[in-house]
Length: 304
Image (tube, rainbow, N blue to C red):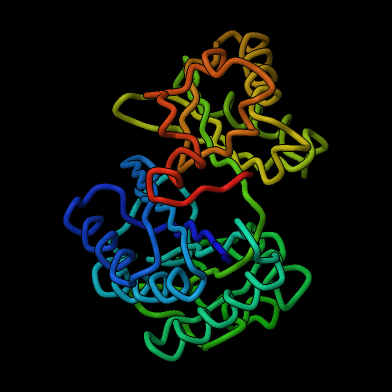
């Protein structure tokens, strides 16, 4: 049986009614299971993990993008995380008996539906990219919604793959296909964002740091703290323990400390096998944060 995952990110992390409506859209198609939901008021963002039959997962994602367009107005949205759309990114991920190339085909189908049904422009990224420079999500999202609204989409390099001008309140959406990744944040015992930015520059692949690591340094408020926000795009190349130890060392060198790790979404069991999860100071840690545990509770047994 083919199983595909989708991890849509929406630009809403505070309004519980909107988040509940997005969850309802994602559960509206039989054959798909919402395994996890996380939200962050600082990033002003929520992330869902959906898994199941490819047809059901793709259709549910398209419906949720339409719901986000109705309920989220980016003209009134302020958060720490970069974004181009009310539904910002919609990645499809192979889990079982489906290839990355097949997930890219589903991404292309979903993108066509998003443009046809909701008139939201679409950029294809990673394995679904139709232009090599769009394999990297950060290239697609550069400047955010505001840059698109100001006319960046007129530039030939910034034209969407589907559609034209950005939706006036929902922006655009990046739809892609990728392998499993780990999204996480490490919070520091300082409110100085320059320290978080220095650490992010030191560890990310684009600056010569760890392979398969993307990182940003941010400042959060209430409580006031700095954060290193990361995607580990291949945890077999660079694992969470490697990153935690390096961030901890760099933080000490800069006169502060790494306090805790926040997981965004679920983590594959194999990513924790190299050490003791207690070392990572995972906020709210329970075995339910493991992808396979959630799949099993949904009646899906998957040997990842």
